[in-house]
Image (cartoon, rainbow, N blue to C red):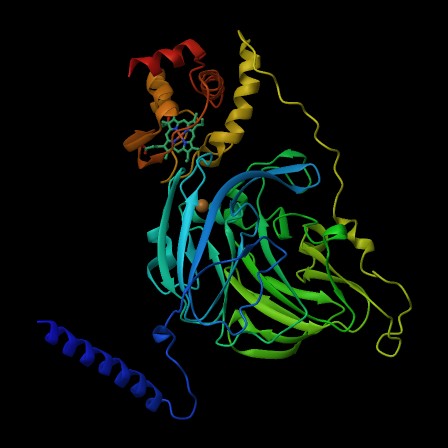
Length: 485
Ligand code: HEC
Ligand SMILES: [Cu+2]
């Protein structure tokens, strides 16, 4: 028995040897290794970075089992001066954490959904060969995590994004990032590397309207963006936040486009790209002025900076740059080189229009205190705030819901028929088929972590808005439902 195993083992080994030889012989001219057959040696934790930074180059390290742990966080941020936005993020930044791998790595990917989050999410990595790019294996509810693994078969720069319905909304809220798969031996060495991603945003208010601005589904469908920005917000790469280099250095930019809708005409004013990895792939174009980055696509560009100054990064669909925020800066310091650029000496010649980045008065509204025996007006006020933080993402700002995904709360027969049932839904979440205003929904509402007082306020707000039946929900009613189960 033992001998048989030994013999079988030897045959197995021979088989592998033959296979390896076979693949070498079949590609006589170039020694291309089938990435699927690259053996991994050892395990390492991936370094993840937030934009505009990237992890250290792979160099010539061997393929490994690479552990990637990415956490989903739903957080409030500032999209422009005085304008707040509820971002959904991979790793707490927009775009999400940069992941750097090499071809042949076996990536063990764990996606965790923070317990404070409201929504289920998942991830579709364009670098994955497999159903949904991982989306099917990574769908994860708040307070849970999922692990799956994949082998990186194709070198290149790839977008990843959330693919949970409504997909467009998850992407529009910032759920995208880049994963780089370096070729065997790594990319050529450069002096500086940066991570930039363009995205378009759709808000209820117009560009610059202050306060917390909810996502606007209608504008998103119509592709009528209020903001088009690099790295999630107006000014993420300007002034103090500019990326930098010194005269004589080579700069490589990893640029992605999360969309959801718009294609980028990426350009650096005053520079020419020496090399462009078209669409993030292996084909290199040289001496390029403006490169297209499709929504859900990426590009790698590099160039040498020869003269000092501020170089402006734009989407050359130029109103986006000067009126919607798609403007960044690369500040190059060092010695002038009059031979290369004499200059009429107006550094930042394109800046005047940069008045663009509008300064809005700071919204200094203080948070209302928790208070007992509130009047209806006070409950409406507090309820609205809770609604805009907690419920609007799914049920939408004016309770209209989203067809086939989230039922309406506006004029909802289901809501108005039974207040205790509604309280129970907010307390415990809801799954299973329900019919609201004649339409069927069969989805998941996650449990909301709210106090009895907050539930009373938010439901009072919902019942007293949008043609509902004006029920005044008290904390005592909430407590009663809670204790009755
Ligand atoms: C994660 C997205 C999500 C969030 C956040 C959410 N809901 Fe829901 N809600 C749903 C879904 C999905 C359903 C339908 C569940 C089903 O199909 O069983 C639902 C159903 C309901 C219903 C019953 C159906 C109706 O339209 O009348 C009420 C009431 C409700 N939600 C209120 C709220 C309130 C109030 C909040 C905020 C405190 C909230 N929901 C937050 C997704 C959400
Ligand atoms: Cu998502």
